[in-house]
Length: 106
Image (cartoon, rainbow, N blue to C red; front, side):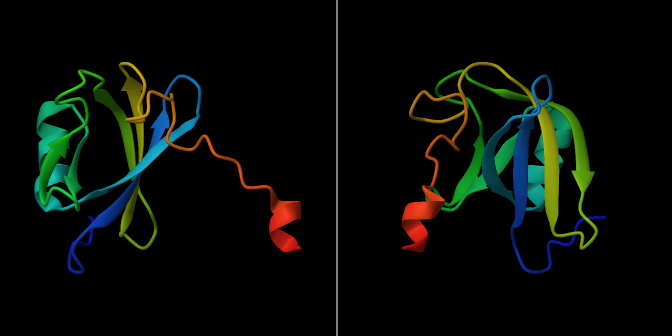
């Protein structure tokens, strides 16, 4: 069972077909329950201060396929079918900027 005592839990979103990491979002109990009830991944938006179902304006929804709770019961790994790009920039994944580790170490 997830532990929402400290508020939000992190949700790592992974493409079920490719295994690519698409995004990181946050859920409260209500977002978690809505995700399970509807089959569409719903988050709690910290900037909008409300529930937000991915794709509610763009149509680029995330269909729930599988879900795991981590050993500390404070984060989720969610595999989805992505219906369009996940990132609001139009990129498939929100993780498209690679850090130059060698340059960062100097």
